[in-house]
Image (cartoon, rainbow, N blue to C red; front, side):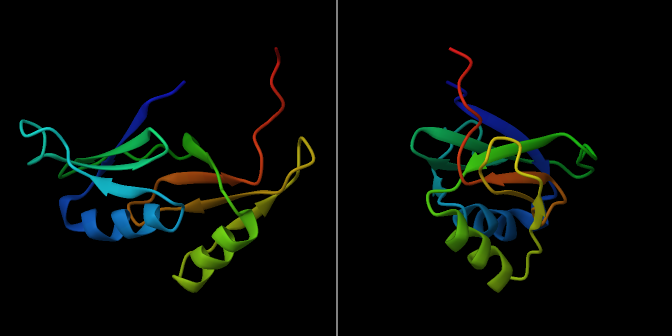
Length: 119
């Protein structure tokens, strides 16, 4: 299980990024005291996104986080209503998926279902 991913964001975009992740079902949780002044954490079902406050964040052009939406169609609609522009992509395993950028510019894949397990 992947427990968390860290994304660098400008400090002035913290609230916007927390709102973005809330659209995908993630809620803000307290970071441990030694980290709270330099990171904001959001969590859904035990998986966390650590939003690292960085003055000059690095945003990979193709690297991305991927999340399975609890209700894909509603998640895409929420993103659109909030001013984000998800781009539908080809279905590789028979489930819809889209890419969208968070307010800090990070690429996020939103999936209706994960790829089939290789086990």
